[in-house]
Image 1 (cartoon, helix red, strand yellow):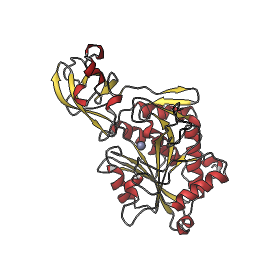
Image 2 (cartoon, rainbow, N blue to C red):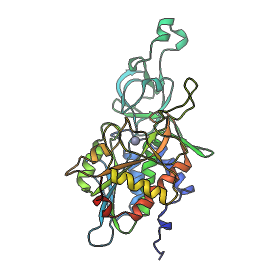
Image 3 (cartoon, rainbow, N blue to C red):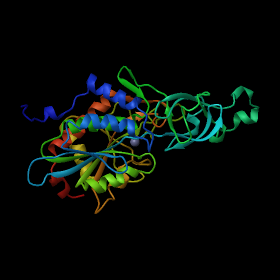
Image 4 (cartoon, rainbow, N blue to C red):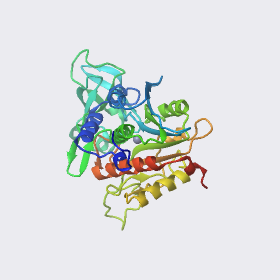
Length: 360
Ligand SMILES: [Zn+2]
């Protein structure tokens, strides 16, 4: 039997982990239709967790028990769903009106290839050819009513109520990764690795949540059910770190690629527990793991409902920074993913209830 050391509790990203992220990114799991990702998660965690269940909303809850009298109950959450679209009206001839699910910008939609329904039927989001419009029309922003999903006249293959998402396949670009739904398949892939490398002294309560992108619905019941002492939410936060030309410096980047995991202090739904923020920063500094502080501001994730559950749950979030989330393709850095894994795995390996006894 392997001797449990801190070192072998640090999951390494290799071919196997990249393949897993690729499968997760290519899977279609728009909010409310997470089955494809859930299937992969169940396959991966079942051999490693002590208890695995799918709850009434579709969250996967996987528990790995720790040893000792009363191990600290640490909830780790990552959302399985992605933003996307739903067919709402059949215009005939394979053309459908649709609505958005989650934070999708209409400006990202025209002319994009999509996958529709459980069978990934290929389609495209069409609109009136721009060059046939008059000048007034060309200046007007495109609205949802101007757009249709066109799958061709393939009768019976799709129907009103089907979900759709961007047809983007995952690829590696040198030190970067490009794919759809990396928010939050990166968190899901990280959490799978953490279940496989669970530290011995805690009850690791993994929640792979549903419907995060439409008001954090799954995490609310997951946190109630798991009843944790504290929580760490694993997500991917926007990096708006592009060069600027009209001002001296980009000071509103939220997070930056290549600067390590982004630790949250405040977003629009959570003031993160200062003891946990401090603990993550100290862990990073002690172990030489690069990190960054996500600029306090808007946005939010599952922590927004987890920290308000029952008598309150001290919560913190850690994200892999990513450019162009909620669009057809995001770009992230492989090193940021590894450092995020290093930080959370190291923090879990050394964590104890003392952290929650400290001053705020
Ligand atoms: Zn997210």
